[in-house]
Image (cartoon, rainbow, N blue to C red; front, side, top):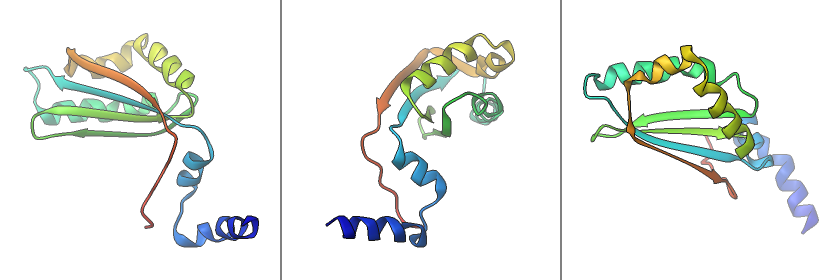
Length: 129
């Protein structure tokens, strides 16, 4: 059995696993999930642009791995950020809220609709590319 596991680990890079995937599999990951709606005075494109501008701030924080922002047909936005730990996620959120330049991007958000949750990942699965 040990030989089989060793052989599988040796050949994984040949099946299209990226370094990002192996980082996420090698560590415990905290997934931060935020849902929100935009303020009525902004349109979806303006909201998307504001969220994209905020990436330059988020990526600079310790523990940041990856961010995915999406929106559905009902106008509900989903912001998913992968962090190395929940502590990294919380520290970044606290510091970002104190950054006026960053918070300007969030003027488009209806904060009465914001829901934030943190999840500890326990398994990762990705389709070979």
